[in-house]
Amino acid sequence: MPSFPVYFLTWTTYGTWLHGDQRGSVDDQHNARGTPFLKPDSVCQVRREVSLAEKAFLLDVQGRGVVERAIEAHCAHRNWGVHALNVRTNHIHILVEASSHSPEDVMGQLKSWSTRYLRESGIVDTRRRLWTKMGSTRWINEAQGFQAAVDYVLNHQ
Image 1 (cartoon, helix red, strand yellow):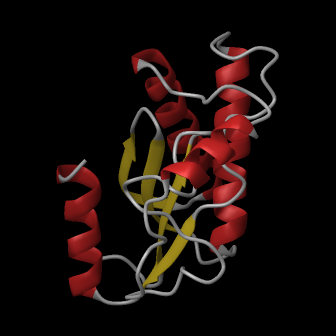
Image 2 (image 1 turned 30 degrees about the vertical axis):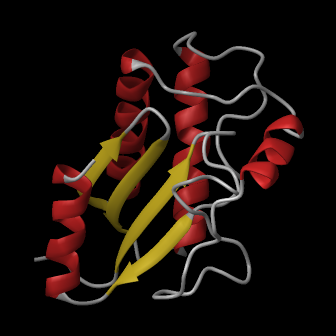
């Protein structure tokens, strides 16, 4: 069992999950646990798509592997415990024990190192944006929530 808190971090690739999306989304008014997401709105989604500075970014199989290695290497370097990691084509989930840093700082470091590895591998070159600006930073403080989060990350993607 980990030492709590464990951070459950999620972030998306640039341009792949915009406000108005059918899956729902969050903003400053719709982000508290247990509150509803923003409702799907195709007009809003199209407006967001048109305003993108670059095309949406998706990770292929090779890119997913590079991001996974980057995250694992950085967490090992920092002595952060990775309890579950799932790199998908358009988002990343990780359960990480890193209480020496804020969850926002951990996410920022993982995004930065993932970008560096993607550039060094030649998968990404001149593109400026790979990730959304923010992401979800949930704190898990008890065993039941931890087990549910591990199950979600590893088995429900």
